Image (cartoon, rainbow, N blue to C red; front, top):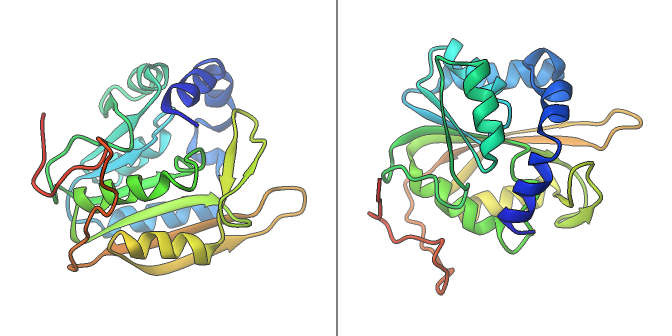
Length: 221
């Protein structure tokens, strides 16, 4: 699934998506509490990676976090900026967040990784590890299921992950999982969330031959 295909799919349904999911009070109460608690633990700037309509970015800002929303879909960024004019939003791919090494205290990736094919997810987590300073953290929300199994998402193809497999992905990128959460509701695809802290151990790209992987110290504004 290419970035272009995801952008086209979400652009065509941006208004519908915002209506259905573009408010924190439409999220499960436990998700609201988890994200709020995580936000209050941050000691520095954060990015809401794949911010969509911007509601979680706005929540982070309301909780005192210097938060910025980033999304692949220009229409989402436009809508988010209109809805939350006091919050900063910009267009970018999660493979290249365009911030200096170790600049962030945290990254929220709430269901924004679900469309990355399994072979591409390490690229994204390597970028997260580059951007987050040791002691900072990432909070990831995703569909729980067989690792890397594709399914017909309402917008475009998505992939499920088990908590164990997603934890291994994070560990390979230099993160230590501190919390794991799961929720099963009849008739709804199982939910999972992981909170992981950036360790001090060095992480090597190990993904040579791709322009999306940057050597440590790379940054171009």
